[in-house]
Length: 156
Image 1 (cartoon, rainbow, N blue to C red):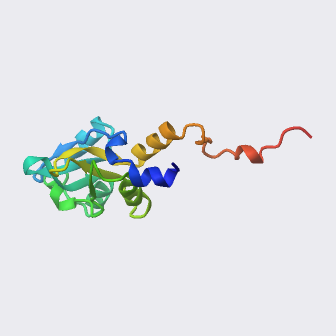
Image 2 (image 1 turned 90 degrees about the horizontal axis):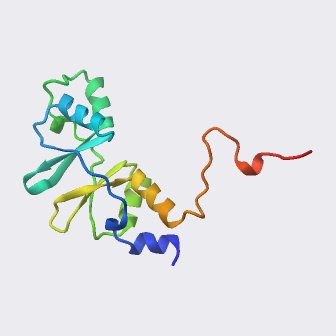
């Protein structure tokens, strides 16, 4: 089975999921930002009843909030939800997360159970970890800013 076949057949539940930071729509921006910083995560998920995701507050949301000079101490996260909010079920093929990241440019995808309840986050890091775990021999790691190894000359 090849890489594309695996993307289309392996379920999202096989990705290494990250724990989500959960807030409600009335959470003040400063509190959500503090949680994001303390957990070293670039987003918090806004949930409604029964842990159903209804939006996502990301670093991009913070930039928009600051650009508009809104108050961190009185602005609820629901006012600055990221428009690129995306959810997939854990039984969906990994291809759905791949397409969201590659084609739609989202960094975080909410993963839900079959009832729509949040169980974690997938995204760029999950896909990179999955690739390294499944294709460790094929993945070549190159330092940023250095010349590719095949362009480095040795000898005379």
